Length: 294
Image 1 (cartoon, rainbow, N blue to C red):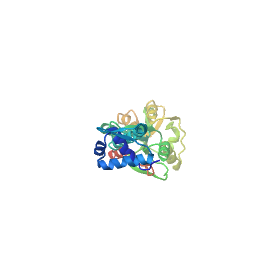
Image 2 (tube, rainbow, N blue to C red):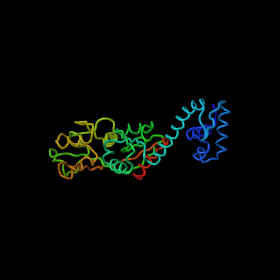
Image 3 (tube, rainbow, N blue to C red):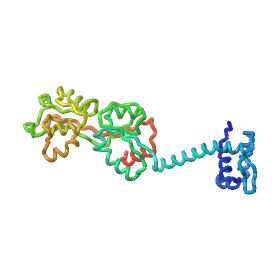
Image 4 (cartoon, rainbow, N blue to C red):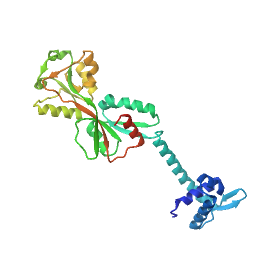
């Protein structure tokens, strides 16, 4: 196979233009350089590719055959370059993000709205998953970056940046009014019907760990899939819900729920944006992170 692909580039332009001079203009090289490239290609292939006509050149039968294949390859390369330029100019592309319901609703969504207004042709795919699954997907290069909540175990190659403080609270409705405005011991949670998140999430793991360290053994009455449902169960007086304050804020402010107070502060946590140092970011993902000031 001929190793100098530049000869094929010249061949393509000459064949399309039907003229050595016109091809030289398209390629911004001299006409003798075009003629030399064509001769070298013909010599290497052992075939006559062009014949001279009154207004330029015309492909021979052998040239027609070769051009049918070269044109497809060269035009695909040109198309690839165009698509790449569109991607770099944020006129084309995709971003894959990992986020939970919580991080999406209370941090990421406003940035996605602004990004979409600015770059409407970029497709954004959000994989909704808890923190452990998001970190796994990031390690496997299935997503560009993740927005998760602490705590989580460090992983090689992952870089986390804190972006927002969050706070875990226990909330209840009127059935539990006897606990309102009281300073409670954490151990009193053992007597209450607790509503928790189910499964392996950073929120569930964090609260389990915190209570265990303080020798509190909680047996949840209900374990639910989402924090929104925990709030709804608490509104119906089915128990005391453990959620991030943001989920219950509306109901705490209008008085339908109240927050239990304890003589030991539950330490605050953070939302984090996590990237993989081993996974180069696309132009679109870099611009979204810049919009988020990461």
